Image 1 (cartoon, rainbow, N blue to C red):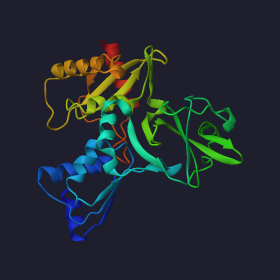
Image 2 (tube, one colour):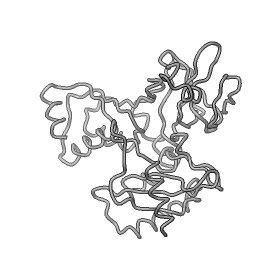
Image 3 (cartoon, rainbow, N blue to C red):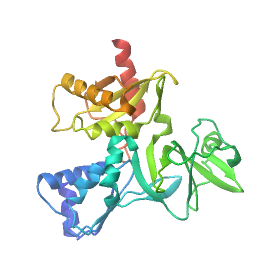
Image 4 (cartoon, helix red, strand yellow):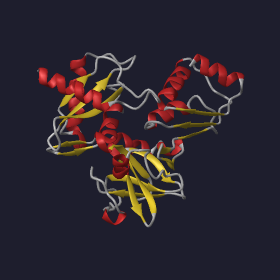
Length: 303
C-alpha cells in the first residue's frame, strides 16, 4: 500500500485497475491510517467477485464523485456486463448478503446474454439448449463481438464451451447465475464449484456471502466432499488479522447462523483452515476450492 499510495500521489493518478485483493489491501490501509486518494476518479476491479462491503470500504478512501466499476467477463468474452459501485450498496447489498449472489449489473448492449439449464455435457446447437426463466439459476452464456470462437488446439474444450447459433458462436461462461425481474445479472459461482448434495444444489457465491457478512470470519469457501449428487457440503473458513475467537465458539456461531438460514441449513460441517486460502497467482483473489475440497476430504476421512 505504501508504494501504491506514493505512486498515486506523485503522478496524480486518476484511474486505477486492480483485483479485489489489491483493492482490499489498499482500502484497508487507507482506513487504518485515515488516508485519502484525492486524485483518483475511477477504479475498475475484476478477476474475482467484488463484494459490496469492499465497495463501501474503497469508497471511503475516494472523493465523493469518484466511481468504482466492477466489470464481469472472462478471457473468452470481455466485457459481458458492468455495474457501478453505488448500485451494489443499499438493497442490492442486502440481497447479496442474504444469499442472492453477486450482482454484476446489466449486460452491454452489444451482447446477448442468456441463462440456460445447467449441464456438464456439450451442447452443439443452440436449439438444444434450454433457456431458463427469470430468477431461475442456470449457466450464463454470451454472444457478442468480443466472444472467441475456439480454444487453440483443444477441440474437446471447445466443444464443451461453444454453441453454434445461426452461423455464430455462443460462449458458455462456466459460471452459474440468473436474471432478476429488473434485468440485472447475478453471479452465483463457478458451475464446477457447485455442491450437489442429497438436499439439493448449493452455489458458492450465494452461500459464502451469508457467512462472510456475519463478521465471524474473514472469508469462507463452500466445498463438496464425496461424489455428486450425494456430496457433503463443508464450509471452510479463514480468520482475518483481527478475527481470533476460539475456533469452537466460531463453529458454534456459524452452525447457528446456518440453521437459521433456509439456503444454508443443510450445512453442518465447518472447518477452520490453518493458513491463508490458496488463491490464483494472477489475481491473488480466486479461491482454489478444489484444493480446499481435497483438504476437507482428508480431514473427514482421518476422523
